[in-house]
Structure formats: structure tokens, C-alpha cells
Image 1 (spheres, each protein chain N blue to C red):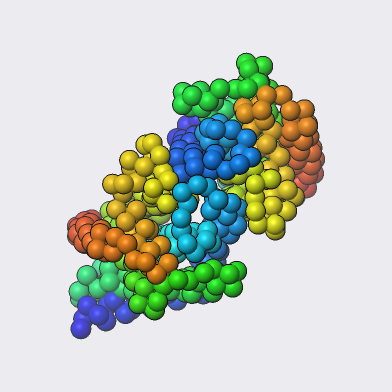
Image 2 (cartoon, one colour):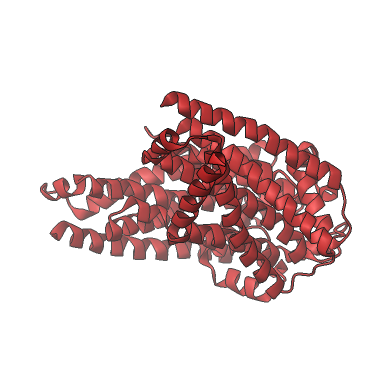
Length: 238
Length: 255
């Protein structure tokens, strides 16, 4: 919170991309089979996932700095448990993720987006923001613990960006015409994260989309946390 | 002659750095290819939107934007190198050693151009390989690539002015962000006529819109708004030249 760049960039950049895309791609709603006549409503899912990608960077960069400055080594001299180190790191990321969700939601409501799932859907959306921040944050801590380098963590950002763009970010999967792109988007877990948020906004209650979204978050979080815990053990033993 | 000698030295050093350092070279090639893939591949269905009338198809439509974007970001990435030279102390030594300091800006400009030519070649080859249609004649295509060169020079001069004022890599977002905004507030995904609301209002007054529309006209073989496009591009070059050379003076004054 004391580093404006760490807070402002995850808030401003996704909103800017939302503004650009929702203006530029509004004509897409005229395609037969497009699920809504509001592109902002369709695209509002993107900031939630893009913000989570920033969580990865934040969690990883902060932990890598602690490693580079020797702070983590000093922690190993204390009786602190590994879980507490990871929990403390990820707690901040989750709070920032929830703050981002409030801002994205407020922007969406301000420009006229209405949630088909109602107020309960908004609560589910916050639960999803919690899960997705935890999942991606754990990947960030894993990267930091394995590499011990802030630059290496930052280097992951383009890779995550590829996952975001090769997904159903800008168009529903069934409307993607190029076969290999549709297949890649279908195999890409980020598509299902987007579709879980999108279902709450433009569909209402879609159990399959929500189960896939929450399920993928849970799998990423379990894998990320398990490997982070192991990587922390290895690093503390050095 | 002294100016040219300085320019040649700065350009050679910058290009040597870029072409021997994969972490500098690869992003400038991969990012345009990635955007081309994401836009032309993922959004190809947009050609079915009523009113979309670009005759060569969506791959060609997006190629022009990505080519111009790669040119602009080629300039910005070279601006990062200028900031890095100031952070490392090399630029200060260069200011002391150069008899004609305007050659420094010229040298970075030549490096930005050569660097972008490499990217543009890769992008063009890939686009042709995936079936991009070309309707324009040789003269039209020269027009398209000259417009891209103008974008490259304008972006380099902008980034150079920022780098010489701030003299730190932390100014990277200041170089990059406005270029990103100006590019994406042009008709990126659909022709200008299909934009509606506030983004249409901005796109109409955005000078880059003229450049993008003219570039698409060149590729299709039906040039449109050529005078406006070259006028807007050259005005940007002129304005940012003043910005860059005033930045050079500020860097000199800062010592």
C-alpha cells in the first residue's frame, strides 16, 4: 500500500484496456450468437482476471525482494512456520485483489452493467476474486522462491499475458472462427476463469461455468501452495 | 561530418547491444507477432459484422495496425536504451565526448529504424506465410512502409525526449503509456465508420487514425486520406523533434 505503483497499475491498466476494448469491439455484439448486446458487460470479466495476473507479479516481486535483501534468511532464524510466511505474503495479495474487485465492480455498475445473477452473484464474484488472487499469488510466490530474483518474476508477465490473449477474452469461444485459436482457447484454463465471471454478469447462474472456474482456481492454488511450501523449505534449509 | 560520425557510433553501439542481447531483441520481435496472432486469429469473425467492408479480409486489416504498432514500439524500446545509457553513466560520457551532440539523437534514431526493419521483415514474412492478402501495387506498399517509418521516428523522438529529461529507466511507463493510448484510441479492431460513441469521437481527432486508415488503404490498393496521414505523421515528427532536442539541452544542462 506504500508503493503507489504496486496499487495503481493493477487498478488503472485493466480499466483502460476495458475502456479501449469495449469501445473498439462494440460492433462485435452484432454478430449472430453473441450472448449480450452490451460489450462492456461481456468484457467486464477481463479486469478481474488481468488484476489477478498483477497479483502474481506483486506476490512474487515482494517475496523475491525479501530473498535478495536477506530478510528471508533472517526469518529462518526465528521459530516462524513456513505456512505463516506464505500466508502473510498471500494475505496482502488477496486484500489487494479484493480492493481491485471493488473498483472493477464499481466501474462496471457506473457504466450501466447489471448483474443477471443479482446481489448474490456479486458476493460470489468476491469469493471468486479471493480464490483467483490466492491461486495466482501462489504462482508468484513459487516463482520467487525458485528463482530468488525479482527480474525473473517480472519476466513471467509476458507469458501470463499470452495466456490472457489466447483465450475467450474478446470473443466467445463458439464464435472464434480460426480452428487452432479456438482449440488453444478451449485448452487454456484462463478461458474458464473468464467465463465463470462472465456467467455471473450476463447469464445468471450457470453451475457448470462456476464449477469450472472455482475448480481451476482451487487446483492452481493447491499446486501453487504445495510447491511454494516445498520451495520455501528448500530455500530455508540452505 | 562530425554529426554523422557521432550518429554512426551511437547507432552501431545501440544495435550491437540489441542484436547481441536476446532479452532486448526477442520481445521486440515476439510481441508484434503475438498481437498479430491474437487479433487476426481470435477476432477474424469481425469481418462478418454488418458494415465491415475491408476487401482483403481481417488478417490484412490487422496486419497494418500491428505493423504500425511495431514501428511505434520499436521507437519506444530504443528510448528504454537511452534511459539505460543515462543510468549506467554512458550517456554522460557520450555528452562529453561528442563534438556535435545532435548526432546522439540521430544515432539513436538510426538504431531504432534498423531495429524495426528487422521486426517488420519477420512480421511481413509471417503475415504472408499465413495467407495475408495484398491488393496494393509496389508504390502503395512503399507508402505503407514509409508511414510506418514515420511512426517509428515520431515514437523514438517522443521516447528520447522523455529519456533525456528523466534519465532513468523508471520513466519507462511515461514513454510507453501515451503511445499505447494513442495507438489503441485509433480504429484498431474495426474501421472508423463502425466505431460508436465516445471512442469514435476520440478516434476522429486522433492523428494516428489517419495513419492507420491510410495504411489500410495502401495495402488494399485504394489509398485514402494519404495527405492527412502524411501531414499528421510529419507534424508528429516535427513536434517531437523539438521535444527531443529540448530534452537533449536539458540533459546537457543537468551535466
